[in-house]
Length: 376
Ligand code: TRP
Ligand code: SF4
Image (cartoon, rainbow, N blue to C red):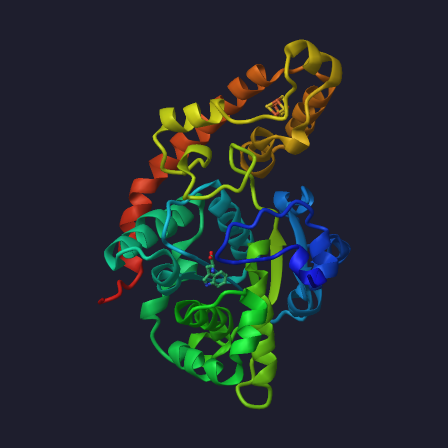
């Protein structure tokens, strides 16, 4: 077995990455820590997920993005979502990254990956379109992404030279290379991968605004697509004049069973559109980092590092650092037991979802009105 097979990043699988630091050596992702000083020097505000180490890695974020900011050149952030399942706390992480970049003045592109979802999840077109609008676009707007400053589009419906890119890309890649990157490959997956490369690179074309410096915020499972895209950009040097994109990688939030959070596991995944009672019920039955008995937990303390409840605090429900540190200490010391902790968390969850869902109805109307709907 080659070393790279030790951790397989399958963008269409359900990767369960235990040790993120292995990705530095195996794939050449750089630790995000190394760019933080330069961000501070540039007076760029650090987001909570940067300060909390949720963003653990990057490619060329300093040499492309920070440099462009320092040179006062325009910058963009681009990412995509497969509209095949409901929007959950894992997707919200990416949403907050986009909002963060938008506030820093980046142009935002959001691809609704309906072509990809059709190829790999096999849902009817009608469902993909409705989910794309009502789950993804609407939730992103309700979270605070400014629709006026964001370009949302469906992959099957992007106008202009975007589709030409996919055709051209197919001529500079071999079947063996695709197999080496993705393992099992099908025509649908090949087209999806090349479409994703077009998603990432098309903002550079003059007709889409000529954004030469693009950062792609994604979960680590998407890195194979970024390696392909960066390679393709290089192969067209002197012809299409495309820059390899930069990227940043976040740790994937865990589901309530400690595995991956995923739309296909609704019992252990909290969706932003879950009825409040249902969300609280799931939350209360979450696995924790607690001990077998109360006595043991008072003596040994809990293990927040292993706790999906703590993950929710860290990623979303406890934005205040002082408060989070306090929870961490009380958990570790055994002075707070999981029952008490969950009651606190459940109230937080209720407050967040209530406020979010209030914004959602209006956001849905906006979402239907701003995104062009595919004709087939
Ligand atoms: N493949 C991504 C996913 O499974 C979705 C996606 C499509 C994407 N195009 C993209 C992500 C461009 C980042 C950039 O979620
Ligand atoms: Fe998790 Fe809270 Fe229990 Fe600690 S006290 S293990 S953070 S549920």
